[in-house]
Image (cartoon, rainbow, N blue to C red; front, side, top):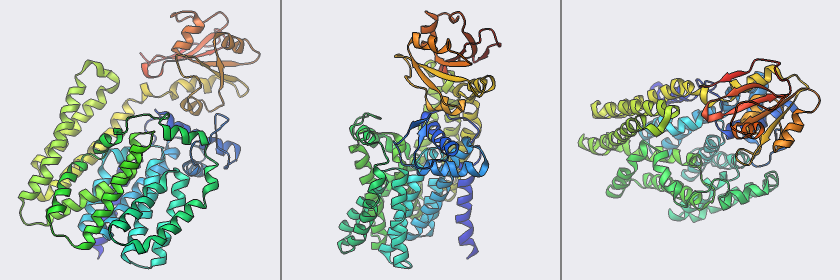
Length: 531
């Protein structure tokens, strides 16, 4: 039926509206995005797609698929900007929404599938991650694609060879995205088959393991020291329970429906196919949390592959409640949790906006959180039971658009280093040498953001004498220093550099206190950015 096609396409359109507009509305604020984008730019500059570099140094800490996709996008548009760097992840986010719909259709029914896809499309953290030039949403896409093939093979839907191929092919692509990718699929699939008394089907998973082992040479690509940093937690150390506590926050607001979903599933007599679907989603989430908690390195974005099963569980629960005759169930298990989450966001935003220690940098975000929380609360309290989900999802979507198209771009002036480094691009000739002064109190090397927006290789000098020798050399020379480095050169907290050294630009925003020096004293008027 035409109606059956319009609604899924409408969800994909909604995801596109939330994830695609304004990808270049603000610059790279973190190092991850800039690092991957710079590696992609150096692919295009050198023509070498096999040996990744960042600032001319070999970069072998991550698999190359995201950088390849970014470079391929930039080769079409002619330049690599924030748009080209973020577009692969955003398209993967839109496609993941469609995959969640197809998974829900296979595991449950059409209503559950539509609600699950809607929930994922408007989950704020998922929208944020999809609009970010990182690997996690791309990995989530491959994990969902592999699970779709696995479920269709397990349930005998369509051609079994085609379903098995759909299960196997995304696994190596997951490895090429992030080496841990197949661990989100293969162990949960094994556990599911064992718990559902289908051990006879394990040979397919053996074939999947063979596919992964065939990619063993790829692991030589990755810096072996990176494995040690990840497993020992020296990269992003946190307590073992860190992600267990972060998961409900990352999956908000629909994670608030999971306790009700568990209670509902235990008290109802459900068809066996439906119970198997719930078991698969539970194993997917549980194993993912245990695996990530056992890992030494922990970051919130590592939880991205667990957002689709969360949306599927919440979508199934909401569909069952809305299909029942009594309205009280929807009032109790849908309205109350969503209203509680909205009220918590509203109160947190109001309190944060008026706390002195928040500062002007985060106050707009706190105020936006209060406004968005108020909208969610109004939608959850005023909408009729049958319209509750649509009203709440609409409020979520509006909040995401306001945040990413209005609030965050308004903070770009103080968070970005691009305006500061535009002075370097304008004043430095093609043969000029640029260096960065690494100090013990600051960053020892130029961060990837500096390299990306400088659009040139940046050397590193250490210590005051080395910096002065560099600026005393022949030819045009520029030195990037942070505030501690400038005080080291000036011999105190004054703003006057040593004789023979000129200030080209100064960024006084607290988030990025930088000074651009040169050996051209008095050659140009300094550009001052910030308060």
